[in-house]
Amino acid sequence: MPEPGIAAYAAYVPSYFLDDVRLDPDAPAAARGTRSVASYDEDAVTMAVEAARGLGRSPAASGHLLLASVLAPYDAKTAATVVHEALGLDGGVAGIDLRGHRSGFSALDLAAGTGSLAIAADLRQTHPGAPDELAQGDGAVAFVGGGSEAASVLARATRTVEMLERWRLPGETTDRVWDERFTAQLLVEAAGPAVTEALRAAGVERPDVVVVSSSNARAAAAIRRALGSDGADAAVETATGWTGTAHPGLLLADALDRAEPGATVLLVSATDGADAMVLRVGDGVRAARGAPTVAAQLAARRRVSYGTFLRWRGLIEVQGPARPASPAPAAPPIHRRRGWKYLLEGMRCDSCDRVTTPPGRACAACGSLDGGKPVSLRDRVATVVSVTQDRLTTMPEPEVAMVVADVEGGGRLTGYATDVTAADVVVGSRMRPTFRRLWTTDAIHNYFWKLRPCEEPTDGD
Image (tube, rainbow, N blue to C red):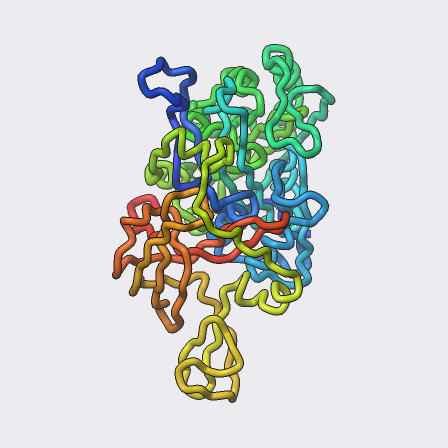
Protein backbone atom coordinates (compact mmCIF):
# COMPACT_ATOMS: atom_id res chain seq x y z
CA MET A 1 0.00 0.00 0.00
CA PRO A 2 1.26 3.53 -0.70
CA GLU A 3 2.25 5.87 2.10
CA PRO A 4 -0.94 7.39 3.59
CA GLY A 5 -1.03 11.00 2.56
CA ILE A 6 -2.02 13.60 -0.02
CA ALA A 7 0.00 13.82 -3.23
CA ALA A 8 -1.98 16.67 -4.82
CA TYR A 9 -5.03 18.81 -4.08
CA ALA A 10 -7.24 21.40 -5.77
CA ALA A 11 -10.30 23.34 -4.62
CA TYR A 12 -13.04 24.85 -6.73
CA VAL A 13 -15.08 27.80 -5.50
CA PRO A 14 -17.84 28.93 -7.93
CA SER A 15 -17.64 32.37 -9.51
CA TYR A 16 -20.56 33.94 -7.61
CA PHE A 17 -21.61 34.81 -4.08
CA LEU A 18 -24.87 35.86 -2.44
CA ASP A 19 -24.97 38.11 0.62
CA ASP A 20 -28.52 39.53 0.54
CA VAL A 21 -31.72 37.48 0.49
CA ARG A 22 -34.19 40.37 0.50
CA LEU A 23 -36.75 40.47 -2.29
CA ASP A 24 -37.47 44.05 -1.22
CA PRO A 25 -34.17 45.98 -1.04
CA ASP A 26 -35.75 48.48 1.37
CA ALA A 27 -36.73 45.79 3.86
CA PRO A 28 -34.52 45.11 6.90
CA ALA A 29 -32.00 42.29 6.44
CA ALA A 30 -33.56 38.98 7.45
CA ALA A 31 -30.31 37.01 7.52
CA ARG A 32 -26.60 37.76 7.58
CA GLY A 33 -23.73 36.00 5.95
CA THR A 34 -22.32 35.12 2.55
CA ARG A 35 -22.70 31.94 0.57
CA SER A 36 -20.92 30.69 -2.53
CA VAL A 37 -23.26 30.23 -5.49
CA ALA A 38 -22.84 27.84 -8.41
CA SER A 39 -24.05 29.07 -11.77
CA TYR A 40 -27.30 27.81 -13.32
CA ASP A 41 -25.36 25.34 -15.50
CA GLU A 42 -23.37 23.78 -12.66
CA ASP A 43 -24.10 20.79 -10.45
CA ALA A 44 -22.14 18.30 -8.36
CA VAL A 45 -20.77 16.57 -11.47
CA THR A 46 -19.54 19.70 -13.26
CA MET A 47 -17.98 21.13 -10.10
CA ALA A 48 -16.27 17.78 -9.45
CA VAL A 49 -14.80 17.84 -12.95
CA GLU A 50 -13.60 21.42 -12.50
CA ALA A 51 -11.92 20.65 -9.18
CA ALA A 52 -10.21 17.48 -10.44
CA ARG A 53 -8.98 19.11 -13.67
CA GLY A 54 -6.87 21.41 -11.54
CA LEU A 55 -4.90 18.50 -10.08
CA GLY A 56 -2.79 17.89 -13.14
CA ARG A 57 -2.43 14.21 -12.27
CA SER A 58 -4.50 11.03 -12.13
CA PRO A 59 -4.93 8.31 -9.53
CA ALA A 60 -3.12 5.00 -9.80
CA ALA A 61 -4.46 2.86 -12.65
CA SER A 62 -5.61 0.30 -10.10
CA GLY A 63 -7.17 2.92 -7.82
CA HIS A 64 -10.62 4.44 -7.52
CA LEU A 65 -12.44 7.65 -8.28
CA LEU A 66 -14.54 8.37 -5.20
CA LEU A 67 -17.24 11.00 -5.72
CA ALA A 68 -18.88 12.21 -2.51
CA SER A 69 -22.10 14.22 -2.80
CA VAL A 70 -25.54 14.34 -1.19
CA LEU A 71 -27.26 15.82 -4.25
CA ALA A 72 -25.83 13.95 -7.23
CA PRO A 73 -27.69 14.61 -10.50
CA TYR A 74 -28.91 11.02 -10.80
CA ASP A 75 -30.28 8.39 -8.43
CA ALA A 76 -29.35 4.77 -9.19
CA LYS A 77 -27.05 5.79 -12.08
CA THR A 78 -23.45 6.28 -10.93
CA ALA A 79 -22.52 9.96 -11.26
CA ALA A 80 -18.81 9.18 -10.84
CA THR A 81 -18.75 7.56 -14.28
CA VAL A 82 -19.62 10.91 -15.91
CA VAL A 83 -16.77 12.55 -14.02
CA HIS A 84 -14.48 9.64 -14.94
CA GLU A 85 -15.25 10.08 -18.65
CA ALA A 86 -14.80 13.87 -18.61
CA LEU A 87 -11.42 13.50 -16.91
CA GLY A 88 -10.27 10.87 -19.38
CA LEU A 89 -9.18 8.45 -16.66
CA ASP A 90 -7.84 4.98 -17.31
CA GLY A 91 -10.58 2.36 -17.69
CA GLY A 92 -9.09 0.42 -14.79
CA VAL A 93 -9.95 3.22 -12.36
CA ALA A 94 -13.28 2.31 -10.72
CA GLY A 95 -15.82 5.14 -10.41
CA ILE A 96 -17.78 4.95 -7.15
CA ASP A 97 -20.42 7.25 -5.64
CA LEU A 98 -20.42 7.97 -1.90
CA ARG A 99 -23.51 9.49 -0.31
CA GLY A 100 -24.28 11.17 3.00
CA HIS A 101 -22.95 14.33 4.62
CA ARG A 102 -20.06 12.41 6.18
CA SER A 103 -18.86 10.97 2.88
CA GLY A 104 -16.53 13.84 1.97
CA PHE A 105 -14.19 13.07 4.86
CA SER A 106 -14.54 9.33 4.18
CA ALA A 107 -13.50 9.79 0.54
CA LEU A 108 -10.38 11.71 1.60
CA ASP A 109 -9.57 9.09 4.22
CA LEU A 110 -9.92 6.20 1.76
CA ALA A 111 -7.95 7.95 -0.99
CA ALA A 112 -5.08 8.87 1.32
CA GLY A 113 -4.27 5.25 1.96
CA THR A 114 -4.92 3.79 -1.50
CA GLY A 115 -3.60 6.28 -4.03
CA SER A 116 -7.12 6.96 -5.25
CA LEU A 117 -8.78 10.18 -6.40
CA ALA A 118 -11.26 11.64 -3.91
CA ILE A 119 -13.67 14.36 -5.04
CA ALA A 120 -16.34 15.96 -2.88
CA ALA A 121 -18.84 18.32 -4.49
CA ASP A 122 -22.16 19.69 -3.33
CA LEU A 123 -24.72 22.22 -4.46
CA ARG A 124 -26.60 23.19 -1.30
CA GLN A 125 -30.25 24.19 -1.45
CA THR A 126 -32.68 25.53 1.13
CA HIS A 127 -36.21 26.83 1.04
CA PRO A 128 -36.37 30.56 0.28
CA GLY A 129 -36.40 32.44 3.54
CA ALA A 130 -34.94 29.56 5.56
CA PRO A 131 -32.92 30.74 8.60
CA ASP A 132 -29.75 29.10 7.22
CA GLU A 133 -30.20 30.27 3.62
CA LEU A 134 -26.90 32.19 3.69
CA ALA A 135 -25.20 29.54 5.84
CA GLN A 136 -25.21 26.95 3.01
CA GLY A 137 -22.91 27.13 -0.01
CA ASP A 138 -21.65 25.38 -3.13
CA GLY A 139 -18.17 24.09 -3.84
CA ALA A 140 -15.89 21.17 -4.65
CA VAL A 141 -12.47 19.82 -3.74
CA ALA A 142 -10.26 17.04 -5.10
CA PHE A 143 -7.34 15.08 -3.64
CA VAL A 144 -5.01 12.43 -5.03
CA GLY A 145 -3.83 10.18 -2.23
CA GLY A 146 -0.91 7.84 -1.85
CA GLY A 147 1.90 10.36 -1.53
CA SER A 148 3.24 12.94 0.88
CA GLU A 149 4.05 15.89 -1.39
CA ALA A 150 1.17 17.94 0.06
CA ALA A 151 0.86 16.19 3.42
CA SER A 152 1.37 12.85 5.12
CA VAL A 153 -1.30 11.35 7.36
CA LEU A 154 0.09 10.71 10.84
CA ALA A 155 -3.04 9.32 12.48
CA ARG A 156 -6.81 9.28 12.34
CA ALA A 157 -9.69 8.41 14.66
CA THR A 158 -13.45 8.33 14.46
CA ARG A 159 -16.62 8.22 16.55
CA THR A 160 -19.94 7.24 15.00
CA VAL A 161 -23.12 8.45 16.68
CA GLU A 162 -26.64 7.84 15.40
CA MET A 163 -28.60 11.06 15.70
CA LEU A 164 -31.39 12.91 13.93
CA GLU A 165 -29.52 16.06 13.00
CA ARG A 166 -29.67 16.83 9.26
CA TRP A 167 -31.51 14.60 6.77
CA ARG A 168 -33.80 14.43 3.77
CA LEU A 169 -36.20 11.91 2.28
CA PRO A 170 -35.77 10.38 -1.20
CA GLY A 171 -36.84 12.85 -3.87
CA GLU A 172 -36.37 15.90 -1.65
CA THR A 173 -33.77 18.57 -2.46
CA THR A 174 -33.63 20.45 0.84
CA ASP A 175 -32.48 19.21 4.24
CA ARG A 176 -34.63 18.83 7.29
CA VAL A 177 -32.80 19.99 10.42
CA TRP A 178 -33.39 19.23 14.09
CA ASP A 179 -32.91 21.92 16.73
CA GLU A 180 -29.16 22.61 16.55
CA ARG A 181 -28.97 23.29 20.29
CA PHE A 182 -29.69 19.63 20.98
CA THR A 183 -27.46 18.09 18.31
CA ALA A 184 -24.53 20.47 18.88
CA GLN A 185 -23.77 18.93 22.26
CA LEU A 186 -23.85 15.41 20.80
CA LEU A 187 -21.37 16.36 18.08
CA VAL A 188 -19.03 18.11 20.52
CA GLU A 189 -19.09 15.04 22.77
CA ALA A 190 -18.21 12.82 19.79
CA ALA A 191 -15.38 15.09 18.63
CA GLY A 192 -13.58 15.12 21.99
CA PRO A 193 -12.45 11.48 22.16
CA ALA A 194 -11.78 11.32 18.41
CA VAL A 195 -9.42 14.28 18.61
CA THR A 196 -7.70 12.95 21.75
CA GLU A 197 -7.15 9.54 20.19
CA ALA A 198 -5.82 10.95 16.89
CA LEU A 199 -3.38 13.35 18.58
CA ARG A 200 -2.11 10.63 20.92
CA ALA A 201 -1.56 8.20 18.04
CA ALA A 202 0.29 10.89 16.06
CA GLY A 203 2.47 11.88 19.01
CA VAL A 204 1.36 15.49 18.65
CA GLU A 205 0.53 17.45 21.78
CA ARG A 206 -0.59 20.68 20.15
CA PRO A 207 -1.10 20.95 16.36
CA ASP A 208 0.11 24.04 14.53
CA VAL A 209 -3.13 24.42 12.55
CA VAL A 210 -6.67 23.43 13.56
CA VAL A 211 -9.40 22.98 10.94
CA VAL A 212 -12.98 22.26 12.02
CA SER A 213 -15.94 21.42 9.80
CA SER A 214 -19.41 20.62 11.06
CA SER A 215 -22.95 20.49 9.71
CA ASN A 216 -23.93 22.25 12.96
CA ALA A 217 -22.61 25.81 13.31
CA ARG A 218 -22.90 25.76 17.12
CA ALA A 219 -20.86 22.57 17.29
CA ALA A 220 -18.19 23.95 14.97
CA ALA A 221 -17.81 27.09 17.08
CA ALA A 222 -17.58 25.10 20.33
CA ILE A 223 -14.98 22.68 18.93
CA ARG A 224 -12.90 25.55 17.56
CA ARG A 225 -12.89 27.25 20.98
CA ALA A 226 -11.90 24.04 22.74
CA LEU A 227 -9.03 23.38 20.33
CA GLY A 228 -7.74 26.94 20.13
CA SER A 229 -8.38 27.48 16.42
CA ASP A 230 -6.97 30.73 15.02
CA GLY A 231 -10.28 31.36 13.22
CA ALA A 232 -8.95 31.07 9.66
CA ASP A 233 -11.21 28.11 8.95
CA ALA A 234 -14.20 30.00 10.35
CA ALA A 235 -13.38 32.95 8.06
CA VAL A 236 -13.54 30.71 4.98
CA GLU A 237 -16.82 29.22 6.20
CA THR A 238 -18.24 32.72 6.68
CA ALA A 239 -17.38 33.50 3.05
CA THR A 240 -18.78 30.29 1.54
CA GLY A 241 -21.33 28.84 3.93
CA TRP A 242 -21.24 25.15 4.79
CA THR A 243 -20.54 23.32 1.51
CA GLY A 244 -21.70 19.87 2.62
CA THR A 245 -19.48 16.95 1.67
CA ALA A 246 -16.91 19.35 0.20
CA HIS A 247 -16.51 21.37 3.40
CA PRO A 248 -13.81 19.40 5.32
CA GLY A 249 -11.69 19.20 2.18
CA LEU A 250 -12.27 22.84 1.24
CA LEU A 251 -11.13 24.03 4.68
CA LEU A 252 -8.17 21.64 4.56
CA ALA A 253 -7.19 22.95 1.12
CA ASP A 254 -7.19 26.50 2.49
CA ALA A 255 -5.04 25.38 5.43
CA LEU A 256 -2.55 23.72 3.07
CA ASP A 257 -2.49 26.91 0.99
CA ARG A 258 -1.23 28.80 4.04
CA ALA A 259 0.72 26.25 6.10
CA GLU A 260 4.50 25.93 6.02
CA PRO A 261 6.21 22.59 5.30
CA GLY A 262 6.62 20.55 8.45
CA ALA A 263 3.60 22.07 10.20
CA THR A 264 1.06 19.72 11.78
CA VAL A 265 -2.62 20.07 10.88
CA LEU A 266 -5.56 18.70 12.85
CA LEU A 267 -8.64 18.22 10.66
CA VAL A 268 -11.92 17.63 12.52
CA SER A 269 -15.23 16.87 10.84
CA ALA A 270 -18.28 16.64 13.11
CA THR A 271 -21.23 15.24 11.16
CA ASP A 272 -23.19 12.12 12.19
CA GLY A 273 -20.46 11.64 14.77
CA ALA A 274 -16.92 12.89 14.39
CA ASP A 275 -13.74 12.18 12.42
CA ALA A 276 -10.26 13.48 13.20
CA MET A 277 -7.11 13.33 11.11
CA VAL A 278 -3.61 14.59 11.93
CA LEU A 279 -1.39 15.52 8.99
CA ARG A 280 2.13 16.84 8.54
CA VAL A 281 2.53 19.34 5.69
CA GLY A 282 4.95 18.10 3.03
CA ASP A 283 7.94 19.87 1.54
CA GLY A 284 6.25 19.86 -1.86
CA VAL A 285 2.98 21.40 -0.71
CA ARG A 286 3.24 24.47 -2.97
CA ALA A 287 3.83 22.38 -6.10
CA ALA A 288 1.10 19.95 -5.03
CA ARG A 289 -1.58 22.65 -5.23
CA GLY A 290 -3.21 22.37 -8.63
CA ALA A 291 -5.50 25.42 -8.70
CA PRO A 292 -5.55 29.01 -7.45
CA THR A 293 -5.62 29.27 -3.66
CA VAL A 294 -8.99 29.25 -1.93
CA ALA A 295 -8.37 32.87 -0.86
CA ALA A 296 -7.67 33.92 -4.46
CA GLN A 297 -10.83 32.25 -5.71
CA LEU A 298 -12.91 33.91 -3.00
CA ALA A 299 -11.48 37.30 -3.91
CA ALA A 300 -12.33 36.84 -7.61
CA ARG A 301 -16.04 36.12 -7.12
CA ARG A 302 -18.89 38.38 -8.27
CA ARG A 303 -22.10 39.23 -6.41
CA VAL A 304 -25.37 37.77 -7.66
CA SER A 305 -28.80 39.20 -6.82
CA TYR A 306 -31.36 37.23 -4.86
CA GLY A 307 -33.80 37.25 -7.76
CA THR A 308 -31.17 35.83 -10.10
CA PHE A 309 -30.24 33.19 -7.52
CA LEU A 310 -33.88 32.08 -7.18
CA ARG A 311 -34.25 31.93 -10.96
CA TRP A 312 -31.07 29.89 -11.39
CA ARG A 313 -32.23 27.40 -8.77
CA GLY A 314 -35.68 27.07 -10.32
CA LEU A 315 -37.30 28.40 -7.14
CA ILE A 316 -39.33 30.96 -9.07
CA GLU A 317 -41.00 30.18 -12.37
CA VAL A 318 -40.23 32.68 -15.11
CA GLN A 319 -41.88 32.69 -18.52
CA GLY A 320 -39.22 31.79 -21.08
CA PRO A 321 -39.11 32.38 -24.84
CA ALA A 322 -41.70 30.84 -27.11
CA ARG A 323 -39.53 28.08 -28.52
CA PRO A 324 -39.59 24.28 -28.23
CA ALA A 325 -37.69 22.54 -25.47
CA SER A 326 -34.22 21.36 -26.38
CA PRO A 327 -34.17 17.75 -27.56
CA ALA A 328 -33.11 15.01 -25.19
CA PRO A 329 -29.77 13.35 -25.97
CA ALA A 330 -29.90 9.67 -26.94
CA ALA A 331 -27.72 6.95 -25.46
CA PRO A 332 -26.23 5.47 -28.70
CA PRO A 333 -24.80 8.74 -30.13
CA ILE A 334 -23.61 9.78 -26.65
CA HIS A 335 -21.55 6.59 -26.49
CA ARG A 336 -20.31 6.75 -30.09
CA ARG A 337 -19.24 10.40 -29.77
CA ARG A 338 -18.03 10.27 -26.17
CA GLY A 339 -14.52 11.41 -27.17
CA TRP A 340 -15.97 14.67 -28.47
CA LYS A 341 -18.70 15.03 -25.85
CA TYR A 342 -16.62 14.33 -22.74
CA LEU A 343 -12.99 14.90 -23.74
CA LEU A 344 -13.56 17.63 -26.37
CA GLU A 345 -11.39 15.67 -28.79
CA GLY A 346 -10.80 16.90 -32.31
CA MET A 347 -8.94 15.06 -35.07
CA ARG A 348 -5.45 16.16 -36.14
CA CYS A 349 -5.04 15.29 -39.80
CA ASP A 350 -2.10 13.03 -40.73
CA SER A 351 -1.78 14.83 -44.07
CA CYS A 352 -1.96 18.57 -43.25
CA ASP A 353 -1.70 18.60 -39.43
CA ARG A 354 -4.86 20.73 -39.12
CA VAL A 355 -7.44 19.97 -36.41
CA THR A 356 -11.04 19.19 -37.34
CA THR A 357 -13.81 19.80 -34.80
CA PRO A 358 -16.07 17.98 -34.29
CA PRO A 359 -13.96 15.05 -35.47
CA GLY A 360 -15.10 13.42 -38.70
CA ARG A 361 -14.02 10.97 -41.34
CA ALA A 362 -12.68 13.72 -43.62
CA CYS A 363 -10.31 16.56 -42.73
CA ALA A 364 -12.17 19.87 -42.84
CA ALA A 365 -9.05 21.68 -44.11
CA CYS A 366 -7.68 19.49 -46.91
CA GLY A 367 -10.42 16.91 -47.38
CA SER A 368 -8.06 14.00 -46.78
CA LEU A 369 -9.61 10.65 -45.92
CA ASP A 370 -6.30 9.21 -44.67
CA GLY A 371 -7.35 9.61 -41.06
CA GLY A 372 -5.75 11.37 -38.12
CA LYS A 373 -5.08 11.27 -34.41
CA PRO A 374 -7.42 12.42 -31.61
CA VAL A 375 -6.31 15.53 -29.75
CA SER A 376 -8.07 16.95 -26.70
CA LEU A 377 -8.80 20.69 -26.68
CA ARG A 378 -10.28 20.90 -23.17
CA ASP A 379 -7.13 22.28 -21.50
CA ARG A 380 -6.23 24.85 -24.16
CA VAL A 381 -6.90 28.55 -24.40
CA ALA A 382 -9.22 29.75 -27.17
CA THR A 383 -9.57 33.25 -28.65
CA VAL A 384 -13.03 34.50 -29.62
CA VAL A 385 -13.37 35.38 -33.31
CA SER A 386 -17.16 35.81 -33.46
CA VAL A 387 -19.95 36.55 -30.95
CA THR A 388 -23.72 36.22 -31.26
CA GLN A 389 -26.23 37.16 -28.56
CA ASP A 390 -28.84 34.43 -28.05
CA ARG A 391 -32.00 36.04 -26.65
CA LEU A 392 -34.19 32.98 -27.22
CA THR A 393 -32.22 30.62 -25.00
CA THR A 394 -34.06 28.09 -22.87
CA MET A 395 -31.47 28.69 -20.12
CA PRO A 396 -32.59 30.75 -17.09
CA GLU A 397 -30.95 33.92 -18.41
CA PRO A 398 -32.46 36.60 -20.66
CA GLU A 399 -29.51 36.31 -23.06
CA VAL A 400 -26.28 34.35 -23.39
CA ALA A 401 -23.33 34.69 -25.71
CA MET A 402 -22.70 32.09 -28.41
CA VAL A 403 -19.09 32.28 -29.53
CA VAL A 404 -16.78 30.91 -32.19
CA ALA A 405 -13.23 30.63 -30.88
CA ASP A 406 -9.90 29.53 -32.34
CA VAL A 407 -7.96 27.16 -30.08
CA GLU A 408 -4.24 27.55 -29.52
CA GLY A 409 -2.49 24.70 -31.32
CA GLY A 410 -5.31 24.21 -33.82
CA GLY A 411 -9.04 23.67 -33.89
CA ARG A 412 -12.13 25.85 -33.70
CA LEU A 413 -14.90 25.63 -31.11
CA THR A 414 -18.48 26.88 -31.26
CA GLY A 415 -20.35 27.03 -27.98
CA TYR A 416 -21.94 29.03 -25.21
CA ALA A 417 -19.99 31.39 -22.98
CA THR A 418 -20.58 31.06 -19.25
CA ASP A 419 -19.60 32.80 -16.00
CA VAL A 420 -19.67 36.09 -17.88
CA THR A 421 -22.29 38.66 -18.87
CA ALA A 422 -23.19 38.22 -22.53
CA ALA A 423 -22.37 41.85 -23.32
CA ASP A 424 -18.85 41.46 -21.91
CA VAL A 425 -17.81 38.82 -24.44
CA VAL A 426 -16.05 40.47 -27.39
CA VAL A 427 -13.87 39.44 -30.29
CA GLY A 428 -10.41 38.81 -28.88
CA SER A 429 -11.64 37.54 -25.49
CA ARG A 430 -9.52 34.66 -24.25
CA MET A 431 -11.48 31.74 -22.83
CA ARG A 432 -11.03 28.17 -21.57
CA PRO A 433 -13.35 25.18 -21.92
CA THR A 434 -15.36 24.22 -18.84
CA PHE A 435 -17.63 21.19 -18.41
CA ARG A 436 -21.25 22.25 -17.82
CA ARG A 437 -24.83 21.06 -18.02
CA LEU A 438 -26.50 22.41 -21.16
CA TRP A 439 -30.07 21.41 -20.30
CA THR A 440 -32.20 18.56 -19.00
CA THR A 441 -34.93 17.03 -21.15
CA ASP A 442 -36.94 13.85 -20.46
CA ALA A 443 -34.92 13.31 -17.26
CA ILE A 444 -31.64 13.16 -19.21
CA HIS A 445 -28.90 15.66 -18.36
CA ASN A 446 -27.05 16.88 -21.42
CA TYR A 447 -23.45 17.72 -20.46
CA PHE A 448 -20.98 19.38 -22.80
CA TRP A 449 -18.26 22.01 -22.81
CA LYS A 450 -18.80 25.75 -22.64
CA LEU A 451 -16.21 28.54 -22.60
CA ARG A 452 -15.44 30.69 -19.58
CA PRO A 453 -13.13 33.72 -19.39
CA CYS A 454 -9.46 33.04 -18.65
CA GLU A 455 -8.42 34.29 -15.25
CA GLU A 456 -5.22 36.29 -15.38
CA PRO A 457 -2.56 34.89 -13.02
CA THR A 458 -2.10 36.87 -9.81
CA ASP A 459 0.15 36.60 -6.79
CA GLY A 460 -0.97 33.62 -4.74
CA ASP A 461 -2.31 31.72 -7.76
